[in-house]
Image (tube, rainbow, N blue to C red; front, side, top):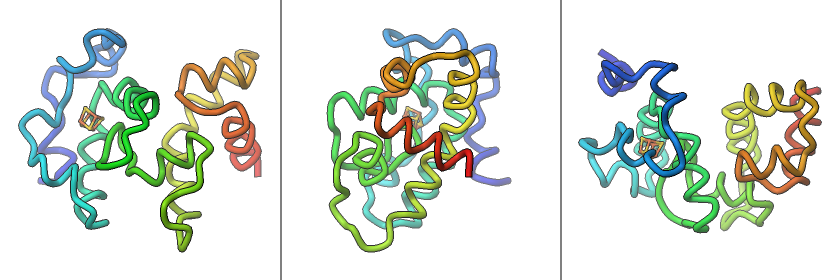
Length: 147
Ligand code: SF4
């Protein structure tokens, strides 16, 4: 069984995710019983495993929003590591070496929400508010998704 399947919450479906709100998202965390160190590790392999757990978490959007708003600069939150979140906030990552692929992965994670909101005619500023991103980051992400 894959990590993702092991952590798939039996009763949490897409409909359940729709019930998650900014005030109750912590009740829906799927990492509650996971290895805390996995989420706090600096090891890329551990971080990837943590992100797989986040990928099936119905609270992911609000968790990421929390980490972005609180400027949490450690650990995996909302499916992203600290440097990926810094990029979303429009900050320079701590390490500039080979982060472009992480940026692209982060954008791909948000691609469905970004494209759906743009299709509805939502301005970049409001998309940014909803996804916890700077408007410039939203514009850059949409440009890259169009390429
Ligand atoms: S998205 Fe947040 S709450 Fe959900 S599994 Fe990841 S770290 Fe935990």
